[in-house]
Length: 426
Ligand SMILES: NC(=O)c1ccc[n+]([C@@H]2O[C@H](COP(=O)([O-])OP(=O)(O)OC[C@H]3O[C@@H](n4cnc5c(N)ncnc54)[C@H](O)[C@@H]3O)[C@@H](O)[C@H]2O)c1
Image (cartoon, rainbow, N blue to C red; front, side, top):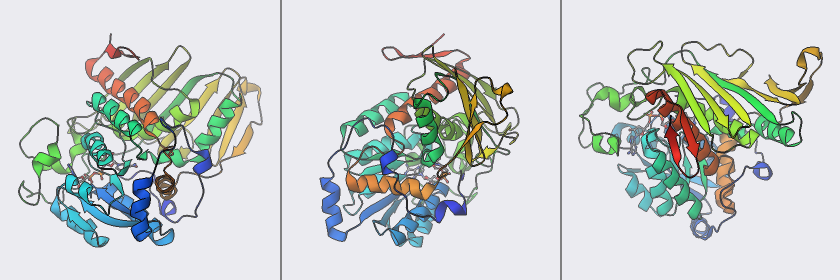
């Protein structure tokens, strides 16, 4: 499932995002381990865990950085399915590991990129940090049943001196840093109502996932137990293995696959943390064969101050307004005005917008770019700077919100959050 991946995303001029990076749980940390490794070969060694569609796409962007910046070197690959491991490792002439623990023991690997199914992200991040590696982990932070693990992952990263970036590349879009600044400057007064969404036609990310080999079976080339990890034990099923996004043991649909892209930059821009209340509706309104919803709407409330509506379906891709990635452009309404996006401009309206002919238009400095996003992470690893563009604390606030949405929908209850009690339902 490729999101926001265009040719333009890969051919890239170098930009320094560092001055504008986001909040971090813990400030600058030591990088002595990295420096010693770099001293040997002058480059950071990269390992890829998960050699499927996303692992291949990340490798392509990393190769671009390897060839142009010469700061990194693709060194090693890991996958529990040998044909994919062979294909990707051979493409980049890397070492092959059938098990991620063995890749993590490799002293030539300084940074790992985790691109396995959702339910492995947290444990593999913890394993990697404990092995002394910096981590770029794909979104979502965890599977929706793993809130305790999401908290543990956050603690482990925060208590270490390792650099972490969550793979929500929309955080590289300067529009959100600009909107954040405008809101902080009081452009719309107190933000009160946010509208956002993700609309797509087709479930090519789930039912449409490719089955490489319909006769594949567990054995020396396919480690089914390692695929399951801590998910419920089940007999091997070729569809579950290749099309894991259809099943709720490994995925959550719109909410956990697509909404991290939508919600993460918004949580950053408006400066909220955990929500106080989430309620969600939705279901399989078009694609019956899957277990997870194709249409999902969430109402999120923050602290008696801000309401946020996050909506989406995979049954119709009409955005309602200009396209930005595949996200519906967000609308930020405040007491004094409204901010939205139109093409390459941020547009600011006064609260009495109906009486306004000419809203203020502010050009967006630079749109989303995966290679620059990864480059920012690599730069942070080199400097030992934990303030990456997509740090783990924002990841936890967003993941908690999305988990509350899934739980609200499944339980048909309102999900509430309290720092002391955690997530409860009524
Ligand atoms: N940021 C983005 O825009 C974006 C885009 C696509 C995918 N993703 C994320 O990347 C992740 C992978 O998605 P994908 O589309 O590449 O899936 P995929 O099925 O194509 O690839 C996953 C790979 O992980 C391997 N794997 C499974 N368990 C493993 C384990 N324990 N150790 C090592 N390898 C294991 C599988 O064999 C498979 O090759 C997902 O979590 C998804 O949300 C992010």
